[in-house]
Length: 272
Image 1 (tube, one colour):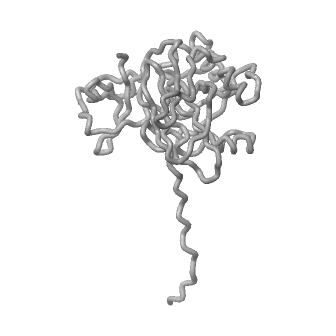
Image 2 (cartoon, rainbow, N blue to C red):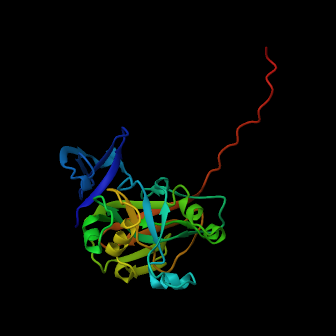
Image 3 (cartoon, one colour):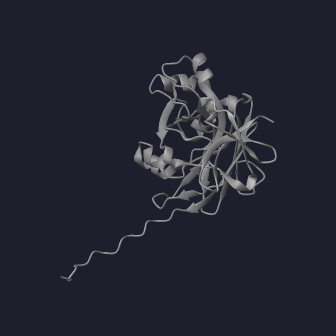
């Protein structure tokens, strides 16, 4: 099994990067692994931590319509060059944390994706240089309020709600180009999405190089590489599971987003 790099929070609130062992213990590193973190000798017992998203990116650059069959199901041609957009870092949640269904939307979709984590500053790179900047791979769900995406034009609102970027459960350094991505809803045995990642229109190195000619990618930044065909809606109470061969499983329940409680109306103060 490939080494699994995790980011965890202890029961005391401390955040660590580390290596996840088969017995679920975590060997703690003194820095993020892409910054050459070294083992400290500290080992966390399984009951002493919870998994966080495996990185804390300054930005998430996502790619739309990067599988031909998905572009077709959306009724659009394959873009001539990568179609990129941003998701806020505040959308990131780890595996098992709930996706919050916002009241502003009547149609929220899952989008299972391969995610890349950048390991070194990346600016104006060639595809060959960009490949060396990709430190590792994880799983993402580019949750989307589909009705708002169609309504708004710009995608910022539809893609940017809190909890709309589940990410995890961990990072691996290497991944087969033929690895299969599958998305499942609840306990259904058949996937709603299933494709090999080599079916992408633009490969990971090409995507990272293209993005680096627009904006500088920093260590820990995330690139979402696009979703295959089969996107569809979720409902409150569902569980969404995205699996990629060679990485693992990202699973999140869907709950109703709680609305903020309005403050009581102000009243005149008659005291003197």
